[in-house]
Image (cartoon, rainbow, N blue to C red; front, top):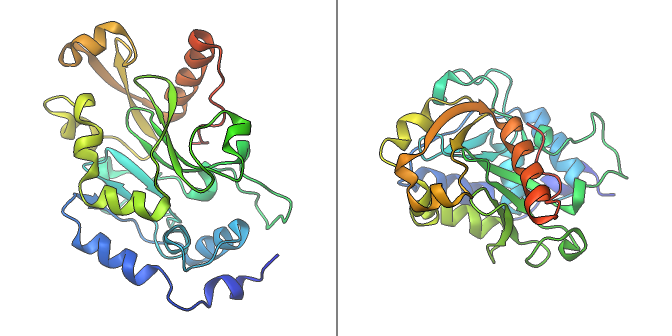
Length: 250
């Protein structure tokens, strides 16, 4: 196990580049203040250095609420998040909370199902950073790549990029193309009104034939994101007989 100083005191830390990319992005976003203590503890538990974009995010950033609240990228937020977040949110989870980190450093702890949940979208989609053996837990992609649990198929999809490239793609307006078939007129007002632990329940379900034929005719309501994730997992098991595994604790 490496000491915290070995993880933080590195040459060419990622944060200057990451903060520059955040500032230069044309995508609307809110960035809550960081909790430095939580950031250091999370970096220590993950045993990654500040040279990586994930390490830079966890150590220096409270997270990112991206694209009118559509996507939440997790970091280490301070407790008081009320200023400027969509819906007046005071409850944007941390990466540590979403992945159920132990309260104190535990050298034997590992992420559930071998992957780290790094983001959620308002539809209940889940972005996970693959661990060392994704195949063993039924996930596509290679170790260290980001995969996506899609709410319109209830299946995992390989994105074929690592965490740093994924973040850069999102900040270059990658969500416009990625969610092109899953957005409706007025979506910004709906996603922007949510708190940090809410999602949008779509009826008929996004994976249904009705929604695929006519997304504009669906209705949506705000629900706890935890409820939405549980529903998606239950339906994935019921319809396909495949458990997608841990989708994050929110």
